[in-house]
Length: 125
Image (cartoon, rainbow, N blue to C red):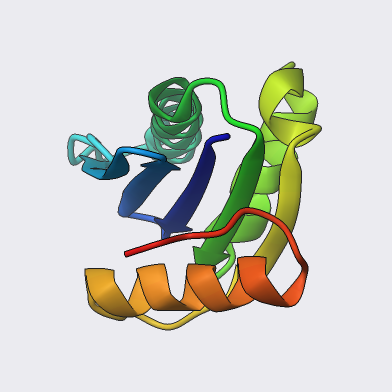
């Protein structure tokens, strides 16, 4: 069984893949060049879409996905999964929860508590 906990905001995502052999962590950053002028909004939206695609691709195939975040990015990422045919991820989504900026261990602990509460994936650290 595999699960994934993602903590995401508008600038970066921390991805924790959980399986029987342990926890694999990766951090992805929004790669947005500074653009000024009329095309700034379109560029920002395109950069965010690419960022969300990159995060989804990095997650890969999982049986359960939990998304945390402190702002709106967690909800935007959920919507992205639903709208952009990431069916394999969106159908395995078990929760989208608010969570402030925390250490990696605190994020994993919040994930463990969430999964334990809902009798889903059992994180052993």
